[in-house]
Length: 420
Image (cartoon, rainbow, N blue to C red; front, side, top):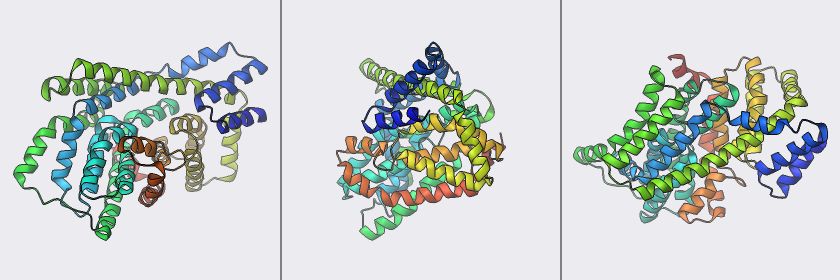
């Protein structure tokens, strides 16, 4: 089995995409040890999930929000509400991401959709590129913490955990992450003397709210529907998609058939990419299960880390290291089936564990050299990646603090789900 892992690492070092490297070593194993006929079945079984059906719908709704100009209205509303606080557009950036996160469920959709608007506005007000881009990357990670959340859907599917409870459990951590970033921005802005906007009056706030209101209803529909039991997370994803389409075509009237085609194309591309990764890693999971690797890892953790906090700290260190070199979704799919049974055996709630893992993964997409969110912002903001890699470091500190709070105080995650 050693050659399996050595071969995989060699392929990764040769810059072979992780999906293909996983397929190559998994199929090679089955060719040598028998069972190749099972490959297609295991890959199909990996994506044959009603829960995973929510993923394309949430991707579709996020793309619709970007295409219909909803992001611009959200940004203007956030600007009217917090633009006058020291740090001005920095706080607007964070609040806009928090609001948009209740519609997209994806850090990349946030960074790609709001990022261009936010960075351009911050440049015009005298903010340097590194600060503007790093803050945009950092604020985008709120998306997968607030419902809807694509990583939580995938975690719930893989770990057989209620996605609805995961969604509700992510609300308080999302607000804590946003608040921690706002505190940092406040002090940095005062030190660098960044510009602030004049305080808007009630009429201007009201106008901005009315224009953004139809979009702001989206997270209310999702959270309210799931919390009250009206529909499942998968059904919530479908409702959100149709609501976003309705807003674009009949309320804001900014949507055309050309834009619809572009949104559908982007959604299909993203869904196919995610589905292919899930299918490939499902096959790898089958190989690892045949060799009883998950059981061996579980036994190791149970033997040497009997305390839940020690286990969580050890897992987070491991995930943070993996997150710097391996794509987030792949890491999630690889480690969750192995670690969730261990966490459960140690008395850790799978909902608490899931939110902590997702928070960790989101810090991972900000951490060089992988830093996927940094690459997205570098592209949309036309900022050198090296500039972002240096500027992101201060923003990691408050996010690490929030991660530690979630580890040591599980009720920050579990309080709201306990009310369901």
